[in-house]
Image 1: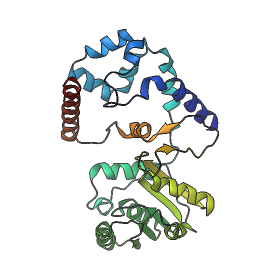
Image 2 (image 1 turned 90 degrees about the vertical axis):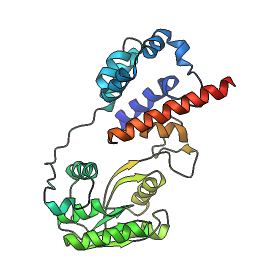
Image 3 (image 1 turned 120 degrees about the vertical axis):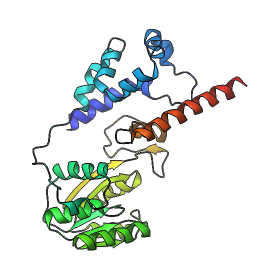
Image 4 (image 1 turned 60 degrees about the vertical axis):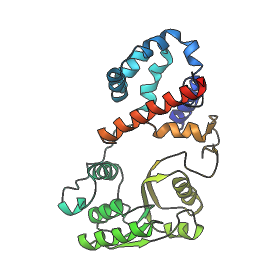
Length: 279
């Protein structure tokens, strides 16, 4: 895994000229001059073709490879080994009570790749506790959920009582050291722990020697620092807050109406920005 990580580190550094410049920060990225033929090819695409390429990563790579041969290494670097765990079946009706469909599929996928540690479960930044409640039912373990929003905690208590799961909610800030102490002797899980919330969890794993930790982070750009400090000090890639935001700009789970609204807003913003520069 370290070798894989260092290959990704090197690849991102070597291709930074492609991805580093940010929309709205520059009117025309420098790579347009470096790759004029690709620029013309992309400008010739209509909205439907562009939408198809956004949805089909293989088709996008096929389009770009003649112009950027180094991208042939990208697919292998992005490929993860398949899970050997049997799929988690959360088919009982009570598993999905008031859980949005996409959220339920994410919980099922997450549950498939982790194993019970036969410890009480602590759900980190859990919202209404959907993940913790599902794992409590699946593993027959008591669950604790940390969530700073009191309204979400109250909703979670109602749902856990309805399905008969022993689930305790703590209305606390996950960044407080007193809250971190709750991780001791627990199987800590988190789905979509944003920015510093999952970084705090990783620090807790080291300082408190957590027995079991499974989490899926997101929103890497949300944090107190403008620059990202990787946990692996041997990495050379330097990332700003704007660079980290790139990781969450691709919408794979948003409804079609939301994607359409996003695209329309983006077009209006780009149009307004162009008009402002002209005037």
